[in-house]
Each structure stands twice: as structure tokens, then as C-alpha cells.
Image (cartoon, rainbow, N blue to C red; front, side, top):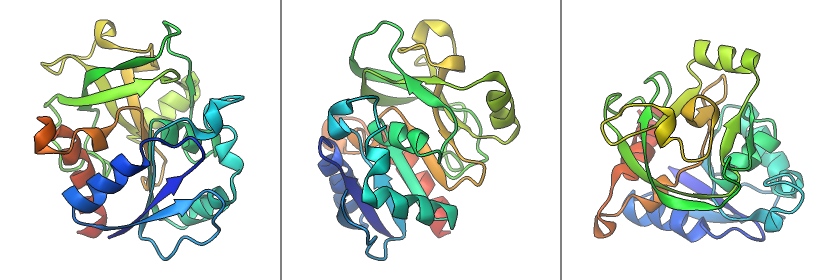
Length: 230
């Protein structure tokens, strides 16, 4: 596959994403500057983490109006694969491509640590090839990662299998004590109804290299890619 990795002023995880997709997973990657209006014939788009536009106003709120995002929305509406991590997740929610929003962590602090997550279901490409009962260790690094959606939206998401992962302990048990940021129902990431747009706060691209002692994130990315190329 040919991936386009978006780069905004303030992106700081773009090279991590490029390295993982290109060097660890073996795919062609091009960087797409936020002012570009040409997607260069990519098969998929990755929106990396960071602090686009310094997170002024609200995380992802300004990036949503960058010229490239008009093309990303068009690409997604035609069924193209779009994947956002951390700030990328925030941008996708601000763009209306994903339901819900990301609020300040309930402790009002920036959190950077490893957490455990588990698939909520296997009815979407991100989790289709994962063990539903296995907890995956993935790092987080965010100040506005508390996922929120209203009751009706959550109800529909459950029915449509749009919840990707939930925070859990090392044994895979989901409970409030292991929720790092206060996300409603321990939600880690979600997808759209058509299951071609995905967003999550933890960074799988930072857990995809044996030299780092953790390749759990690689399993997530491989599941997504395998689902779209099978």
C-alpha cells in the first residue's frame, strides 16, 4: 500500500509513523504537507500525533481547516482508509469524520506512559485479526485524551460495533481504576459507521519495533492493513 502521512505545523510524531509504516511494515510512504491539495495517489492516509497549530483554541480545531483536510474528507467519504493517532484522532473528530470529541484529561495533566488496551470487538479492520481477549501494551502521550460522546451516540456506536478498544489492566480486565484519562466507558478509539476511518489516542507506531522491546502496536497496524488488502 501507499500511505500518505499528514504533516501540520506542530506535528511531532510524523517521523515515527513514517518509520513504522515504511521500515517496519514495508509500505511506500509519502509526506503530505498541510497546505497540499494533492494526495499523490495514496491508498491510505495516516494523521500522526503532535500539537497541530500548538493546540491553540482546541486540539485539532485549527488543523481541521487546513487545505489538505478537504481532500482527506473527500477521500474518506469515497471509502478511503484514514487512520488518526492522538492529535490525529482529535483532528478526525473535529472534522466530523468520527463521532464524539476529546476533552481534557480528568486530572488536568499531560499523561505519558504505557497503558493496556483490549479490542472491544473484531467487527472492524483495526481489530479483525487480533485476539479479543489479549491485552496490548501501547504508550499514550496526551493532555486532551478523554473521549466523550452523548448517550444516543454511544448507543448507536455499540450497535454498529464502532468502538475499537477499551482501557484495561494487564490481564485484560476493563475497570475504572485503569482508565488513565476518564474516557467514557474506558473507550480508547473509535471508527465511523462505514469502518474506513479510525482514531485512537495511544500510539501503536511507538510500539512496533523489537529494539524497543514491544511490538504490540505493530499487531494493530498489521490487522488494519491486512483487512484492506486481503
